[in-house]
Length: 464
Image (tube, rainbow, N blue to C red):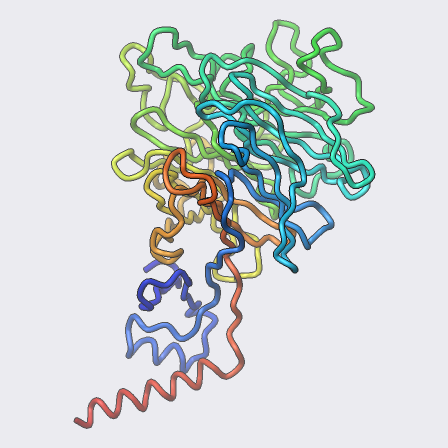
């Protein structure tokens, strides 16, 4: 039992029944001691927000608008077309199509993620990543007169395979000044496997767009860094590690050495960045980038020479990678085979503060990690350095009812959402769902009343 979290005995419930022993009344703590395994009151529970979705891949909220959730659906209602973005009214529970994306759907393609500009309330701009055929897209839209309109393609490039694509994009919370226009973008390594012909180490090559976290300046008034390239329409943040390079390194590269970085996020309290990277055949990993000027410039995370903390196991492909950063946490493939990166919880539930939630798409496992952000990066070892605690939340969060968790999401208040893709790798349409961890505060006096009742029950049993 980890750090004050206690499991409910309520069978087959999707509700999470937890209580903080540190914050409980003294009498409640005493009762819990003599009645082990019993929980006085839930602090939060898992609730389904919306179902019947077509392979949803992401959920978010627009800055300044707490009423609506925006849900990205990978597939269109016909099944073979690109998806759309649903706007869900949390008050009326009605849904409507916010944006309908056009194009054909293949393998791992479709719509992936959307990100609202921090100043969306005044400029109406948002960004969508997708793969159409074998072409990756990062596109800018703007709401004009209540209707989203395409503005420009920020980035477009072809993938060797229809896998390991543009998997996430987002802005750093709390950014100010020019940084409010800096958009972060995850790119996969292209999908050719390490044990196949044609595989090359794209991830660690700063001249390649593949296997990176990019950082783009999307200010429409900023000068285009590639005026002769219609597939690149953005400026370069002056703080980027290769912004002044003249040797061919891509100026938009922020971090290197990733395979398939499926989801990233910023801790809204610290600005630290977490990246969940899907492994090859041995390790799933979480990489960390501290919000510190001396830490976060030009870091490399090891793929393809390294898979997590070990050499790439494909024959002839692995080896040392001096200067690369180890993951802060990794899992072996015997129980965890396709990581879904998540968020550091900063919502209303006190017991979950500071825990980084992530999941396994295949097994449905959901874990929460406590990490000390001040740990020396030279000591990162994927297991113990800086790790305060790892809690298996799977049973507590519905006992596996959220099969195929494809993404997490946050709203403006920091509430955490979990997106269920559906039932299977390419599930039937209409089986996707979105869940929310909802705070259930302790009613005044309820804990003491249960303590008294429990004490009476205990005395009656002893009197038999």
